[in-house]
Length: 66
Image (cartoon, rainbow, N blue to C red; front, side, top):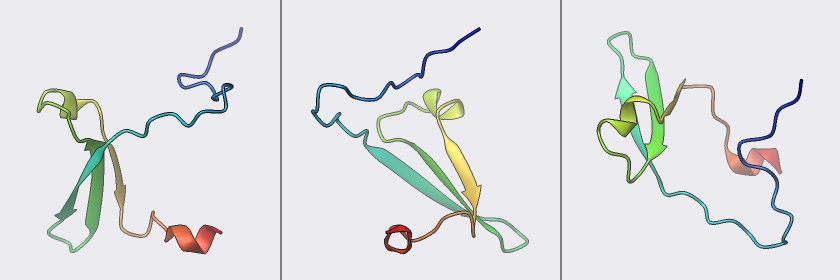
């Protein structure tokens, strides 16, 4: 059994358009911060299923990865 990637690598050499994203930072009562990222043009209904959340400490500075 195999599977195909949802977004296969670009074979044409052109850069695909990057999606516009929005984010929301939530501070929980215990002080933990949570960042949720979702498509900028998502409707409130879409935001229920099109999101990614992570707690503080799960992200790193992009320059530290170079």
